[in-house]
Each structure stands twice: as C-alpha cells, then as structure tokens.
Length: 116
Length: 240
Image (tube, rainbow over all chains, first blue to last red; front, top):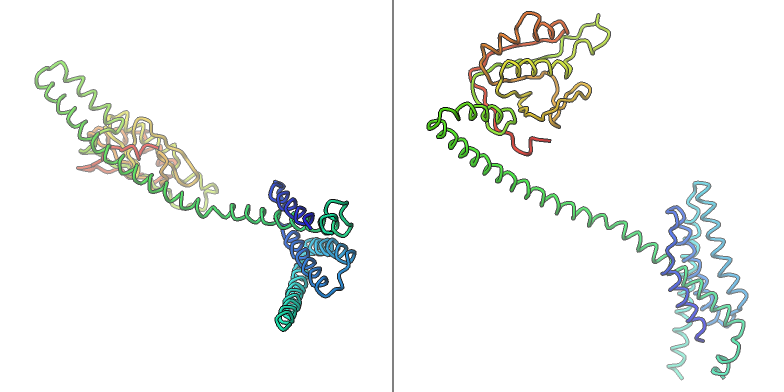
C-alpha cells in the first residue's frame, strides 16, 4: 500500500526539482496531460468501486490517454487549430462524470451502512 | 497478510499503480512549477511599482539638486561681491576679476543681461526649381557660422531658441531639426547674443560676412537689435 504513495511523492519531488523549461506553445500539451492523467485516475477509482477494475485497462488507459492528448495537441499546433480544446472538453466531461459516479456509489454505500 | 505482502516482493498490480502514481505526481508537480514560473514572470507588475518608487526618488533628488543649485548661485554672488570689494581696494586685481567674469559668462555660471542682437534663421521658401531641399533649409553649419561670428565679436552670452550655450555646448544636426545640448529645436532658429549691439551688428553684416553667406544659401536671415536680453544662469539640468 505504501509503494504507490512513495511513487507519488517521488514523482512530485522530481517534478518540482526539474528545471527544464519548455516553450510556451507546448504548455497546452502539459495541461492536457494533467487532465488525461486525472481523468484516468478517477476512472480507475470508479472502476474499482464498481468492481470492474482491471490493471491492464487502467495502466494502458493512463499512458495511452496522455499520449493521445499530447498527439492531438501537437496536431492542433501544427494545423493551426486549437485541437487541444477537444481533448480538454472530452476529458473535462469525463472527469465530472467519473467523480459524479464515485460520489453516488459512495453515497449509496454510506446510506446502506447507516441502514444496517 | 498485508504485512507479509509488503515485506515480500510486491505484486505486479501494485508496481504498475506505483508507476502510474509516479508519472501522475511528476506531471502534476511539473505543471505546477511551470505555472508558478509564469506567475513569476507576471511579477512585472511589482516591477512597475518599483519603477514608480525610483521615479519618486528621482524627483526628490532633482528637487534637492535645484535647492543646491540655488544655494550655489547665492554663494557665487557672494564671491563676486567679495571680488568687487577687492576691485575697490586694489586696482591691479580689476583685470583679473573682469576676466573671471567673462569666463563665468562663457561657461554659463551666472545670468547674463543686457543689450544685444537677435539673428533668426528661417528656411527659404519652397522653390520648385531647386530639386534638393537641402539647398534651402537651415543646417547646423549655418548656426555654427553665426555663433562663431558672434563669439569672435565679443558676445557675452549666446542662446539658441532660448537654450543658452556654454563652453561645452554641442550642436548636432539630426535631419530637419538640430540638437543643442540634448534638446531638440526645429527651424526657425533664433540666436540671441548679449553684447555691444553696434559691434555685433557690424560684424554679422560685414560685406561677404555671415549674413551674405547665409543669404546666398537661400536662408532668410533677420537681424535685429534688442535693448534687453536676459539669460538665466545654467543649472546642472541644462547640461546634458
């Protein structure tokens, strides 16, 4: 149980210590990557609560979504279209949905426990 | 059960989740640090405030300078008074004092007042037959000629469009305007000189002299006598 937490702390410290500067046009990539990561994370939590969690789906979804979002943003920058907006929109909607589902599940669990 | 799991080699799922959380943490922290860098860049707003502060300081300093300059003028007046009293006591010092006075006028340390002449230089009227407008506008060389002539004829103090000249003055041509000690003046140029009007007028109006030369360069020269020309002492601000 401690290993993921350790990984998180290690990742945060690494990110804070990195001094690499990226050009301003590529900053949208990063924001999309953040969104994708958060989306997948909440998706994983939801799947876990719904007892349909699968390691492979989660991990592949995590990295694939990040990659896809970055690719979309890249394409958008080179085509002159703000394609990253599509990714932001999609991920934002899914993020809200996932959180809503998680909340409902937790609420039902809580009320069930209260009734018992 | 949990403890044994922790001590043993962790399961594959745990490792993958650790990897995922590592990447997540990295991305989050990295984007956070980048956005905080951006806010640092936006700190120019505070730089603006700093600028304002320095400006206030500058104004303060300038006011102080002004006060000190006024003090200098008062002190110099005292020195001159002393010298005047020397003149009364010792005849031989008189020449030296006069020379000192002249030098002071030259470097613009003391105000100058008295009779004098004005010479104004104006661009010639537009002449379609002249292809080159350079042939009928006033250049800084023309101003130089007038000033040199006036200095040679003993002008105590000279000003161009109100900017008094001192020993280290410079005049520069920058296109249609001239720069005198860092201040820009357009044509027409009015050159005022304090001195004996008779001598000054005679010297500029000399046959083949300055006025003739300028007139042949298609410049409208107006020479006039003035009963009272006042030129203030130069302050440090005026030196540039």
